[in-house]
Amino acid sequence: MSSKKNDKNKKSNITLIITIIAILVLTIVGILFYMNYNKKDKNKDFAYTELLTSINDGTVEKIEMTEGSDTAKIKLVNEEKEKRVLIPSVDSFIDLVQEKVNSGSNIQLIQKQRNIFVMILRTLFSFLPTIILVVLVLMIFKMQGLGEKGKVYDSETQKTKIKFDDVAGLDEEKQEMIEIVDFLKHPKKFTEMGAKVPRGVLLCGNPGTGKTLIAKAIAGEANVPFISMSGSEFIEMFAGLGASRVRKLFEKARKVSPCIVFIDEIDAIGSRRTSSSGAETENNQTLNQLLVEMDGFDTEENIIVLAATNRPEMLDKALLRPGRFDRQITVGLPDLNGREAILKIHAKGKKFAQDVSLRNIAEDTAGFTGAELANILNEAAIIATIRERESITNKDIEDALKKVTVGLEKHNRVISEKDKKRTAVHEAGHAIVSYFLQTQKDIKEISIIPRGMAGGYTMYKTNEDKAYISKTEMEEKLIALMGGRAAEKLALKDISTGASNDLEVANEIAKNMVTLYGMSDSIGPIHVNLEKDPYQLQLLGDKYADVIGNEIKALVNDADFKAQTILANHMDALEVISNELLAKEVITSERFEELMENVK
Ligand code: ADP
Ligand code: ZN
Image (cartoon, rainbow, N blue to C red; front, side, top):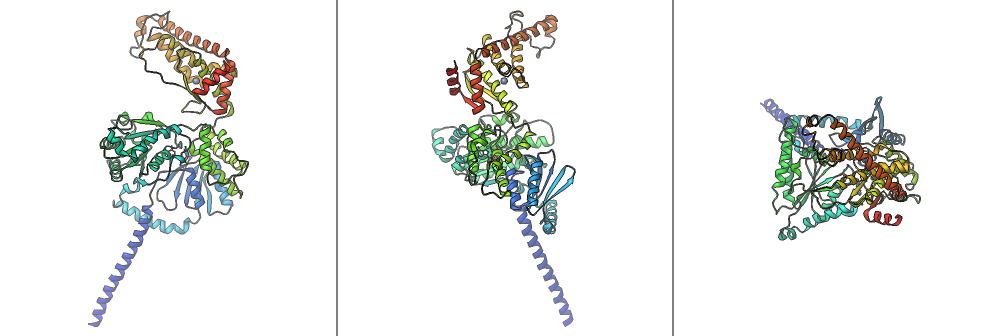
């Protein structure tokens, strides 16, 4: 009897112990799971500067980089997903890691293949069992569908402390944003007046020009929550998930409104809708949901959606309609003063030696984005630390610049002095020739800061819309277009590939003058639209092709000759304007008028 009772006791004891162990294991696994899972996978992309800080902090577990590629795969100690980071130059990055290794840091650099390098944290191995366990458990949970995927990519709500003062330059852009801040702060004032308030603003510009920063600054200035998500995070393999994420994002926004919703890389979901199947249909659903949400705002909801893209032309036109993203703000590359201001902001909290001049750095970095400038100062600080200096010297900055530049040279981004000179002469040519032509619009801005494919640009003031363009105006437009090339020819005694776009536009105009508008005397009032009707020429007779060709040639040649004549008579102006461009990079309309008055 007693033995039986003992048996029973033993049995229940064992059950108890097993239960306790099971609970303990589950709790530990649960905690580990929670810890790992709750680490938000903020952005898929990781900034280079963040990477450098993380290496210093020892939170980078592994980096894999391939020579010749500018992105590296990185894995952080506490995060499950790999991220991508843009590295200015693999070589200089490896040098940097090597320096760390040499200085007795806890990291190891391994050459995996001839051109693939891996940096790992040495302490990784002690964590390995835990990591394997956690990964296993995560995999099981995922297979059972318990881990809700949406959570990992959840949007982020933040209160940001960033203010307009933290955004350097971009004065015009900030001016436009002040209105939005005012609305978020005093929505009543606007609605009582019956004013329509912007719902969506599209920020267009290259990566690193400060689009996210300016969006955060709006939220910071208005003291409202900043909810952000990246377009690429909406893209899902499982149908409907992208759309449901959009819904959740706006549900959240409605709860905390007034607020700013920021959608980075909107082109990932907002490219033109197509009718094909698979991933694209999914994309369409996501985009449709976004449109539905934006149209569904009522006046009580003070939500402003900001979206960033560097390819506005790719976006679905429906996104740009009134009530949606009907405002576009272009965030351009900073000019000389802008770069100096950005450098000043990022110089805060760093110690510099006497010989450092931020103005000089700004002068050497035409074409750099804000992110790249911040990067240079950060690199310089790292170099100075490795060299055990008291403060960052000019030499450290020069070396940092070299490191960053070597990487950029592959992207054809760094502009040599010679190219700058050529661009200055070219743009000055356009501006001066236009100045002496009656029908051409006034100059708004001349710049040798690259934009898109162009090395520089001459911007004209917009005139009132006109229904008709006269023949004289078209002829003079041709002359202005030839001005860039003519200036290169006269001042540099050589021409370059830089004028190819001008020629394309000029030829197109000349062709239209001859074939569409009957503006050629020797051909007369004939209208040939070859795009509409390729056989029309045959009706008119073969010799027309030759005559049309000759007429186009004559118009462009004549314009070229006139442009050269104007410039030959104003070589002093060409010198003054191109020199000023070289020194200042940008000339405004007032300054242009002033300079031209002086040389006349
Ligand atoms: P984008 O969103 O256009 O890709 P970000 O706003 O993410 O660019 O800019 C990246 C970083 O570059 C910012 O966090 C900031 O450190 C720096 N930066 C860019 N533009 C500026 C600027 N105008 N003033 C100050 N810092 C800037
Ligand atoms: Zn040109």
